Length: 277
Ligand SMILES: N[C@@H](CCC(=O)N[C@@H](CS)C(=O)NCC(=O)O)C(=O)O
Image (cartoon, rainbow, N blue to C red; front, side, top):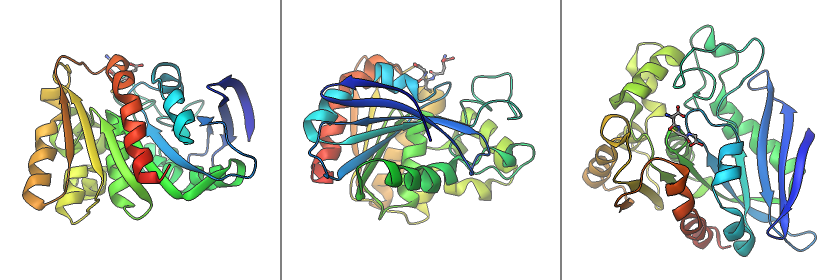
């Protein structure tokens, strides 16, 4: 693993790192914030999955999580949103290909060779993290935004014993039910929608996944709410099937990092309570 850069921030270290990923067959870059801590301490981990067009850097530069993570002693990890680079297939569209993995293990050519973000997020990166950083892997939580909110919900609901809490800003709650999701999943997984259920939070809940600590924050002025995000679909599924959901609607906020940064500290504190931090 290579250290790309480090900065002292809020008493801890914000770093950017790069490694050769066996899951994606590419170099992958990720950001980790390690708060100030006593030598030898093992700290809880909060994962953050980003949305369409993002790299590891968007939340690092605009998400404003460090002060809260420093206060609570939480390590914050921000992976990239897709493989990228030479030989990686792409589409000339912001919502497919590079920056738009939807966190799946693709099964369709030519995507299946590199687009293996499920394995990367669920297996490879946690193993690397545990080797290199002072993490307590028994205390993990996960959050994300938009496509990364979909990622956090689906990774979390597939691995309910691993994460103490799951939260999302403005998530795509059901790729099966929106144009972004339908386009991406048909490309990466093929046309048979039965194969998409593992990548749809509402379907995972319908298929029996349950988690005690699930939270969504959504802005009412989000330009993608009606057509793509469809928060109400998740609200209704949770209500019908008895999955607890803390749903916070915020009047006037849009889809941007101005919304995320406003409520980021609140999410970090919410996870901290559940991580025993
Ligand atoms: N119009 C936007 C659509 C994509 C978008 O809004 N992406 C969100 C996540 S779904 C984002 O986080 N963009 C990057 C940023 O705001 O820094 C664009 O082309 O960037």
